[in-house]
Amino acid sequence: MIRLPRYLVLVWLAAIAVSILWLDQPLALWIESTQTHYSRMLGHWLEEAGKAHWILGYCVIITVIAWRSRRDEAYDHLRLFGAVAASGIIANIMKVLACRPRPPLLIEKSITEWNLLGLQMEYIWNSFPSGHATTGLAIAVAGSAVYPRLKHAFWIIGLAIAVGRIMLNAHYLSDVLAGSLIGVVVSIWFASRLRSKPLA
Image 1 (tube, helix red, strand yellow):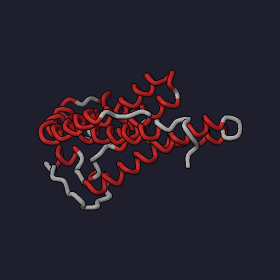
Image 2: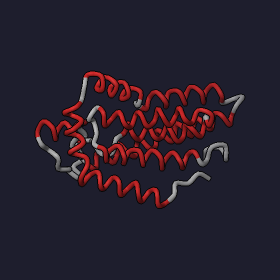
Image 3: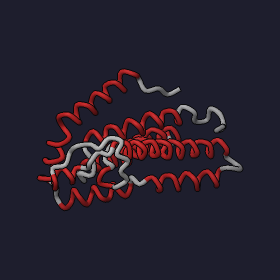
């Protein structure tokens, strides 16, 4: 069974805390001052690539095609679907509970204070964690489990999607780290069950 070492989780959580306290705002301001047309264009492209409906739709299509003759492959894609969908749902619930303002509110209005448990649904107040980073790392982990020979491609794509959120200043560094952790943890749970038994 695939496992994420406990010490790595603790280091990851510590990195999120350090980023919130000392790195997020200076990095966001630096990115704002150095952004170019090309970096924004790349960020927008990665934003589109990181939307969950692409991979979810692909999984549904492959599952339907493979269901009768290649049942193991169908189950693998159901688990990939589950990893992306479940991690995304968790991230979206956390966004509404955390109510963290996104970097544009820092840059334009100097607003940085979280409105914890404010249950705000507005995009501009849904910064923590990054849903795209969650999806990107879910694709990296679960996709690598389904297609081991393409694992390097999946990791490059997943990490690029996550980094793109910082490039675009749509999220703080800690948002991306938190979303990535959710994507990894949830996907490891699903990936550990690849080809082990049918979904209950």
